[in-house]
Length: 114
Length: 181
Image (cartoon, rainbow over all chains, first blue to last red; front, side, top):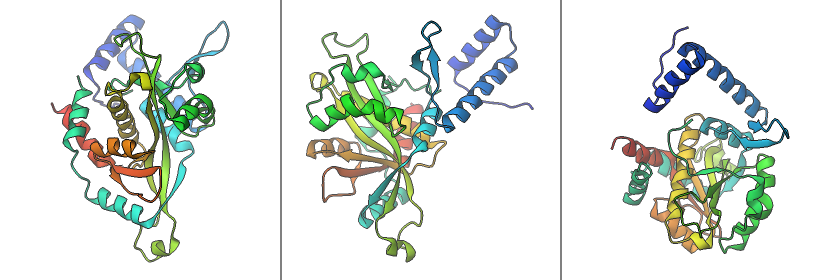
């Protein structure tokens, strides 16, 4: 199957450099990366975590996380929030007519880009 | 992985004994005693903001933290659901249960940095999970004022912590505008 994807420029540069360095085609590299990610998703869905092990101690040295994996982990055990009817109604109204971000939020989001 | 430069990373065992203190006992106690075990049990996640190279070296190693989990918001009264006045199914939301800055690092707008970090994580997650918005638990009036400044609306007023809500669409718009700059 042939697929097309849009990725950030820096990621594309890294992909090209890594493929050259490992003497792999881009397709091979993407195929392996996807296989690893699919495995990670399956393991996280089983409640497992993705960590790097120190070969000398076999102890975890760091945990690997992506927004997707973190999201899957949060979804494992959702908390039940029992709210008053008025709160649910307020939430519904806000969702149906979501307000535009206020100046403070807009400016703060802008600053994260700098 | 996101190209957003997240400031935080997940809590590690050594963090709990790093001397974090925001001055609010329940938040300090949660971080030092419960955050690691809750993380291991999969009950929410704790993201830690560590001192960076460019920060004042006299600042503590842990500058702040926040906790995130997914939640299902539902009404306590079944009758109105049956009558069709309220949604039949629980509404999936992200719960930003705690957000704290070490008292030695306060006054540097780190609270805003942490809030935006959390909102971006939630926005990323909302692309693959159902998420109608973000609920925060404001522990006191000062916290409620803080969240209100960014557009959160108080939805429970009878007791503390007060719950406040911001629709995910509002957050999405804020970050989309950021991308088009």
